[in-house]
Length: 114
Image (cartoon, rainbow, N blue to C red; front, side, top):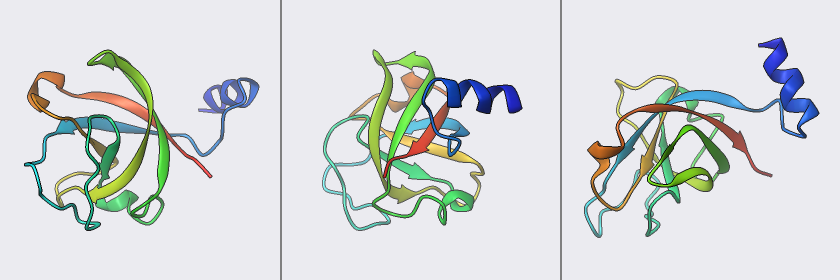
């Protein structure tokens, strides 16, 4: 962990970086999130597990870096707009337009943007 934080500091990153399990979801058109909003488009909105809710409340902007490219995307900025079910821990769910199951699971690093 120390090596990771040192490397992150040398690269100009933030020690606020958090490694999380990552899955993908698709919301029905017109459905509202737990935050009462929905942003159109893929890779613009995430849901956080309940244990991360205090650190990343609704409306928080984060940079997400996937540890493997999915749908041609590796790094993107998203807004926390939903909360995952009670089963999830230390996880995020990334909203995509369709075919969420095709993306599978991966890990990612998230960093809060100020």
